[in-house]
Image 1 (cartoon, rainbow over the protein chains, first blue to last red):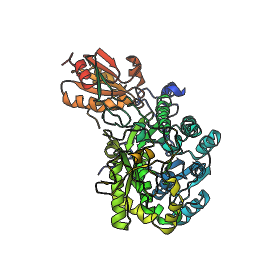
Image 2: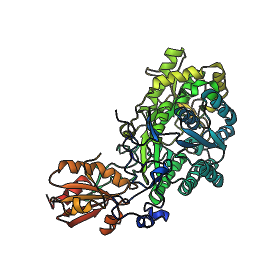
Image 3: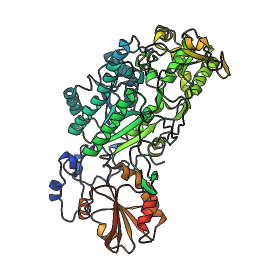
Image 4: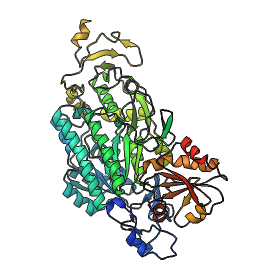
Length: 521
Length: 107
């Protein structure tokens, strides 16, 4: 079978040197200087040189495909540029560390930066990862010993532009994965300081990075982590397209018709964190337009899971796992709650529907995107998810696995929703680009990954850490600005009818207190 | 690969201006999201009207001579040619209905 990126050409390849040979209008580069040197009978107008194969001299970048180029070799995820240099920003994080080991095992040359901000943000709230992780020097040493991987790490803030510029210029990454953002909606809603810090780190960090890429590695692909939360859940029920409207989407008004094809779709972010991601989207989009940067904006669904073969190779190689109200994602939190006997907390009606993706599938997607770089100037978008579920359905799944496989008495509780969001809404996400264009096939089922999570998190030392973190599990951060623990609305027996009330009568759980207003009823 | 033919500065004369049948040209660029999005529509038209209308795509950054000759200042631009003459052109993404309306002049 033909690999998904077989027909891509040097036009897409980061090893190409187009500088001065293509009319990069906004870069101040001109095609004129090149054309002067062209033979009159030449059949091509755009020529380039290959940084990896200088012996080719000047050639037409459309004339060699990945399939034909000896620098691109077959891998399980498509043709892969030999020893491709990938820099991961935020390499100490849940995704960053996982991706570093994953890519390293495939033969990529991995480098990365991190300033441990994620660790600090949790520490500030009194929380911590429940899966213990060492500091980077030790993690790097274990990666070397156990997996034979050499990762080029620098402790660095993405905002330290001169340092970052120097590191990028030195490494010359052929792809840059940008995970160096604060990924928490509740954290951005704590107060003004947190909202400002999240937007400063995310928006300005990304903006500075774009200038650095322009000036040092414009042929490198930027893989920027966005979120499905940028779109919100449009109450019109229209499909949630992959960043842009398709060609056959039309606007009809006043008996006239316009194509919406290629226009960015409306965004409806649901927290100040999500707003930062939307701002990033526009900054990246504009940079592609102004400077011919190449980027994929990866609208990731809610991530969950703990397993990749590399993470499981040694306990010291595990990635972090957060279960607190700020940085824990919903399935990860449910599993932790089930283990320490907290009824799984679903907010409001629990009928919010979200897209999800398992950790290992996310790694597969990232690899496929890295080996299939966008064209010069291309701002591509993928909705990175493998399925969608209501929060209630997921709680049921976690409860089922916990009960059947691990003998746990798992209950579910509906709590007040501290967020401002629609509890019930239409949801029709489109997530076709990754399977159709990049050959992505989901490998992880929620049940299997939930099982693996129970296996890991029920280990005594981790269970103990979850117990120590229990105070941080039930939310206290309200979108309204309040700071109080949410109250239980009702307790639900999994896979059964609601027990303890008609939806108004609150039943106190062991861990949350009933709402005075509701108990009066 | 799409059904529309790849036009260049080198083959424009032969494929478009000397064509026996009308030619719809999609002037596009890789940095232009609407261009990418209308690509399937352009291919669809190429297949549906094969033999009656020729449909071609010209990348404006790789083919600056033709771009400048027709003063393409925005992409996508759709231009309809017949017997070497430019009949009409429209700037911006077009729906299929709009493209068909454009083609109706020569169909």
